[in-house]
Image (cartoon, rainbow, N blue to C red):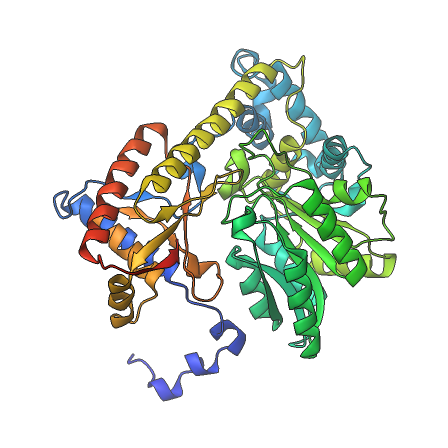
Length: 496
């Protein structure tokens, strides 16, 4: 049967939802696709490029880059997914006693003791109780299971919140620039107006309250009702950790301006500096004396990110506080549309918030395992920062947390002109040349948004130690050659 003519086809690009068409088809995807093609070419013909492998620094996907999964987590998951193991005599010699005990406890909480079944749409109640206890222990303030919604990673709860907050194009959300495109994309799909505010790079990528106020007032003057404020801490792509004083200012700002505070805290376990530590916004708000009736706050956390690296398990939660009972009913209604999040992800979140404790058989090894991963990430970040700061025209802020460095480089005007001649943004041009010359894959800053007239790129710190020096060698050779090729006497600042 011959295909129907194009004019007779039911669905065309022009008939798609215009909000879908408005989503940015960012160059990060194009670079990733090019890298994948090059990988396939290298597999077929190892001599096709002046390098023998692709070094992926574009995605925060730890396990795919060689990081080993947490053994305690995987042991408990294995026992929960195949509970017959609990009755085998060999199990006691293979699995630790606390992993066995934890698996039994978790199975008792799951309906039918079956990880393949549905749970409550908000998540298994017993697991939410465990998570609430973990949050209370972290913050030093009460947390309640009814405030916890277990989710399949970060995207579903962010989309859910946007659907709850956004009524039309005259509603807006204050969103940091740069930030992960999940938030901006979700706003586009909901028809919201993005109200950007710019992180202060010279101040360690801090949040400037005066800048927030300026952009809030400008949006309101244009008839936009700003409903909420997104804050990412530790930062993605910037890698900063906010200080407590800045967090207090943000809480006070949201309270005084009647904004919902949307706290992305998915990298809370990854902090690499002794000068700072992670504090949740809920802890900050409660420490300031603000309770349920004073500020509306939604916090997000995952096991995909942070040192766990369980990206494929899609486990996460959002904690919803400061909403009245009628609003909470609507949150529950929207959550119920997805039946429930996956059970393995729910289990992992409960384990992350209630890891082995002093006296447990797995405690010592768990702490050593975690320590090795955090140390490796910290050392990789430090090596990259030192390297970038040694390059001509390049500077890089210290990576305080998360999984990224975000360097800046002064590119010659000839390089800018070459990019424009190819109808390509300068950061994309640089990233593509880097890929073609070295096999190193990074994400251009234009993917995350940036101050107009500046450019950036994000580089992950997930490379294993044995590949860090190779990364440095390749990048150094490329940058020196690139700067030599496009050298001129005057250059402009290009943030990468």
